[in-house]
Length: 455
Image 1: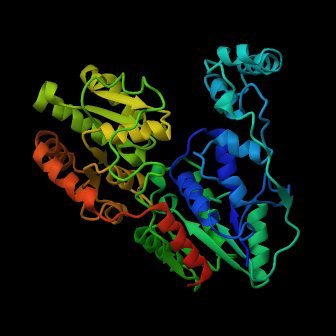
Image 2: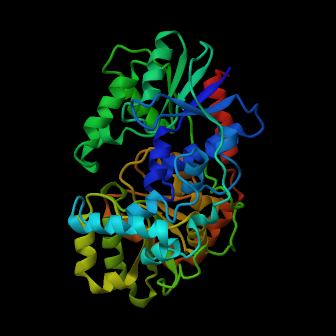
Image 3: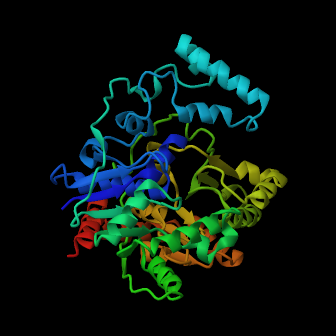
């Protein structure tokens, strides 16, 4: 039996982003461990560059090695990017992001950089404020073997591992395979666009509902990353006459590449901590309405009045997202708050590890989650956390964290203030966390294999 894992969305994400967010981290970690130690032709990756290009296959062992993830490296291995380019497509898009789309200045800038990149690569990178070396020193990378899929055996299993909201050639393949009696597993990360459309941009709920409706035509089983997500899915499925089973697949606490309770590792950027002038409290994740960063700003306004100079810095590690006008207006309107808040928009894994290790404690006031990787990651580093009690988060933190109502500013303030002023309490909690049994990504990959193998 062969397992085909859809990575179409992972490739598209890599073409736009250098670092990974939660769902991409899950895909990469799980495929690395699934491929390790198994026959090279058992765990395969399937992807489609566009809806009409057909399905391309590669071996997961070839694509996902034990190296730290690199978007350019993965794209080069797949033959989707040249190792000798002066800069990657992502780096070019990042540079052009400051110009309005289709504007004359953007067109001129792009043309100029493409010409400079061919004639004077080092100068082109300097113009883009990039390091003088080739991006990520990956000139030596070789492409791996890929081939067009011709047919599937009935016993083969397709796993839709990503956020395949857009119809693709892989989804078409899954539908055909299902009709012929083959097995297709669909992983569900959350139903936030269905349950909480107010947290999403305009077209996302409609697109997501379309995906959910299509999935019922090919899914043999649903694999949900938490009991909360499973409950939400079953609520959705109750509207239809379907008997497709749903199973829970809890994710890991591990921050891959770092040992449990590791305390001393350097950042990939020595200047990372320079903007942080004192001890700090950490929040990790995209700054968007659902993550509820505005509640933390309101808490910090109160703490500054109550604790004054004893208030720690509040550090957000995450890029700016959507529906955050109120967050930005509040921050801009309060000079004292601006001094107390630091935002690190492009943190690498090494950066995040350094921040987890050096923070006083971790906070996560999210209004809704499918799982909540940062809560587990903070525990992996042995750090105490104040966490929202919403949706799946109690499944992640268990009895190792303190929970708050994310909509109750008084409760959030009191819990965070107590953690700041009561060092003995923090140390007591950290001792318990450091000794707790936490899940690794190897555990999670093994569990997924059991679920798809029907064990």
